[in-house]
Image 1 (cartoon, rainbow, N blue to C red):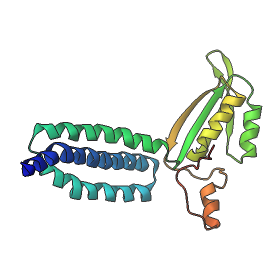
Image 2 (cartoon, one colour):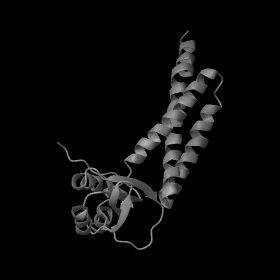
Image 3 (cartoon, helix red, strand yellow):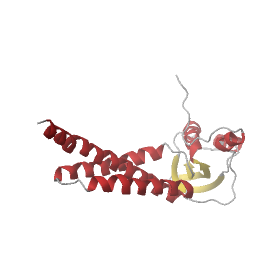
Image 4 (tube, helix red, strand yellow):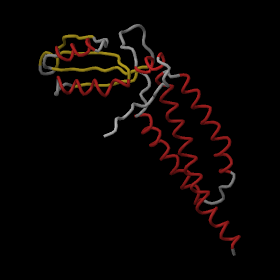
Length: 200
């Protein structure tokens, strides 16, 4: 009786959970790796690719050999779906790479331009004609880690401005402020890919 309970426990609880968790880790790494490839972050993409394949060969393949019931297929598919969700959620908090920010506003953008210049951020301003009249187009390539604070300034100085954000794979030349990661490296502090949150 005890042996049967141990087999039941493993077959219907332990193994499905292992399938679900292993698939989440595997797919999450794959999702983040693809996003890093698209941004041109070669080193991190290669590192994630190594662990992704390692998990597949060692963990997933071993578990797949024990799939003897359609019951496990549900957990396998659920892990795949959850892995995509988790991977994208993690990627949103990874401040790696650069983005192109385009702001279109019908009001004056002098304060916003001054802010960019004070922060030593490259900015290009162009006068253009929109559907309802003259507009100002601002275009800048910025570090992803600075995006949140810059968007807050856009909303502060030009609340009704339209803006769009696109990933940038490579850049040539340009004006960028010295990143906090480089400053930390020069001081001998560890590099950080996630922003620090101050306690309340």
